[in-house]
Image (cartoon, rainbow, N blue to C red; front, side, top):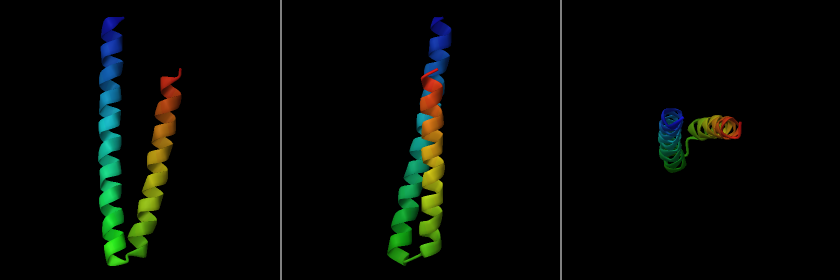
Length: 65
């Protein structure tokens, strides 16, 4: 049981790290899009944000099981 808990905790750590990297990249892209008035990049940031949100919901639902 303890090993299973440790494995799940490690998996959460990996997931949060991945999400953190995704959010960091989104912030970087959004700043570049703003500075360069790049509408296409801004649209991509929005699309990527939707993907990040979907992953968050999926992880929350999995955690509640």
